[in-house]
Length: 147
Image 1 (cartoon, rainbow, N blue to C red):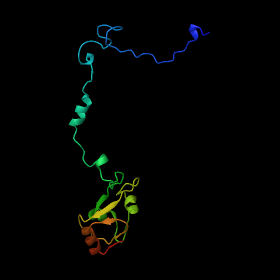
Image 2 (image 1 turned 180 degrees about the horizontal axis):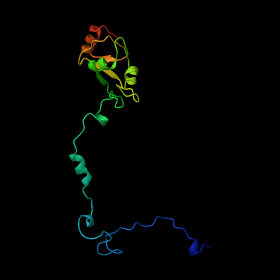
Image 3 (image 1 turned 180 degrees about the vertical axis):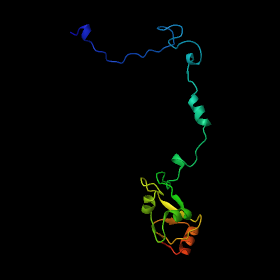
Image 4 (image 1 turned 90 degrees about the horizontal axis):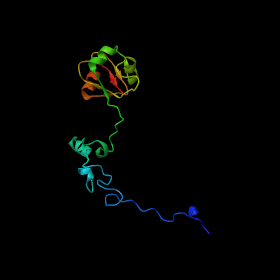
């Protein structure tokens, strides 16, 4: 025969319901007065108010176009005046030579675009660099070439 100390519980214990008389009196473990003492006691989330006041950044996050690549670097703009100062006549202008002359960052090597700001009198050979329409005309007028 089984003794009392070896009996095992077969069902779960009854959940203690607070605030309905009996075991706990007065405030029934809910603290004192106010919104928290009431039934339902749901406080309005104040963080939501802060979030709602912030302006939406349209076009970013899940609304942003799938074709937009946020990791791609913007092109560094180099004017014809800057090329005039940096290079001698007959020189070859590439991303590598621009990095050697510290015109662009050597660490990240961003894309480069030459724009037609200023004038160019030297004959330069531009290779592997984007060129604006105005810069193209100025380079070819000075006797240079674009590849």
